Each structure stands twice: as structure tokens, then as C-alpha cells.
Length: 92
Image 1 (cartoon, rainbow, N blue to C red):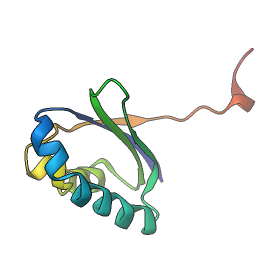
Image 2: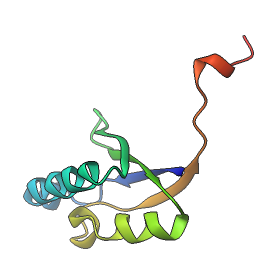
Image 3: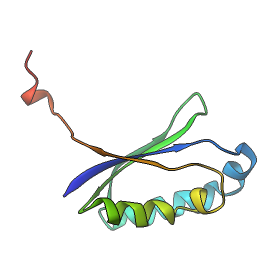
Image 4: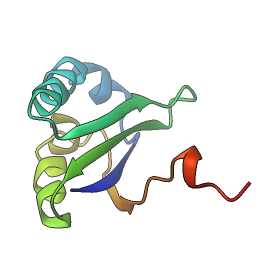
């Protein structure tokens, strides 16, 4: 499995509030499927971040583009593959 960080930058605050429940329900479903490692919002209202754990870039693109926030234009969608480093392998 690979990790992908999906940045959901704020595009429309009103739409974000309107579709928040649908977005959270969608993320809950993906959590239950074991596809989300972590998620949360930025406290400066810049948007949010979801770290997906899936097999490929194509898979995460399909998942992220079905997020109600993205479909409704409340948030953008920037995807980056992410390599997690644990404290055990840091050089200091």
C-alpha cells in the first residue's frame, strides 16, 4: 500500500458549510474501508488534509474526486504521494 496526501484547499466557505455533513459521511465510509490513515482540517480555514492508504495514484484520484466537497466545488483537490518517516529511522 502507498500513502497519498490529498490537500483540499478552501474554494467556497458557504459550500463547505453546506456540504460538510456529506463530506464527513464520505470520509467515515472510507475509514471503514481502511482507506484513510488520517484526516483533519487546518485551523486557519485554509481547507483540510486527508492521507489515504491505497494501492495506486489512480485509485486515490477516483476516491478523492468523489468527495462531495470536490464534486460541489467547495474545495479543490491536490494529490501528492507521501512517504511516511517514523522516529525510528530518523538520523538524529
